Image (cartoon, rainbow, N blue to C red; front, side, top):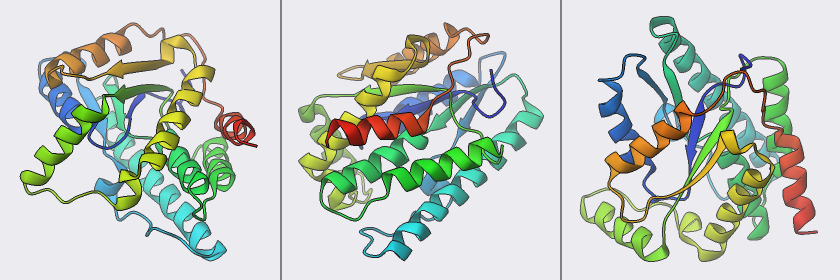
Length: 236
């Protein structure tokens, strides 16, 4: 497995069950001999770019902020690997989420920069400045379940996500972007997992089972540029 492509990212729309599944994995990780390394989500590492963006300068600044956050996530991962070189690596979101966000913005009429974002990622990968996930575990759930989870989250005192991410058209574009990525990915490195009414512990076990079945000697590195081009071509 390439040194710049390591581990898997847990992806999916808001309230699909990523956070609770990762929390469950952390608990399981305490009992696992090899351990678990969770690379934190972008907003945990630092502030996200403001949205919406209005100018070319805004877009360039947003892309640079994401790249800077990705470098910080890589630093976090490298630090963890110093203490646990054989740890199972799981990213809380990754480049596919960033690309999907830009794609959804452009599809919704906002200023977006899908290709610019991809080119920035590709450049940093080629220069070995960042480590990104090789595999993707894409979580899904029905609209009713997601709405139920959203209400529960808000009632618990957590803030509501930005309106952009609650827009049905945006959600559709985000899920479309994840699905398109899955069609080009190796079956060993892409899993669509319906969290449905499953407990976080059950989802966690299914994620870890998928990871354990991956063969490390298979080179299946993501081609983000081809992915972005296929997204754009799909809607020309």
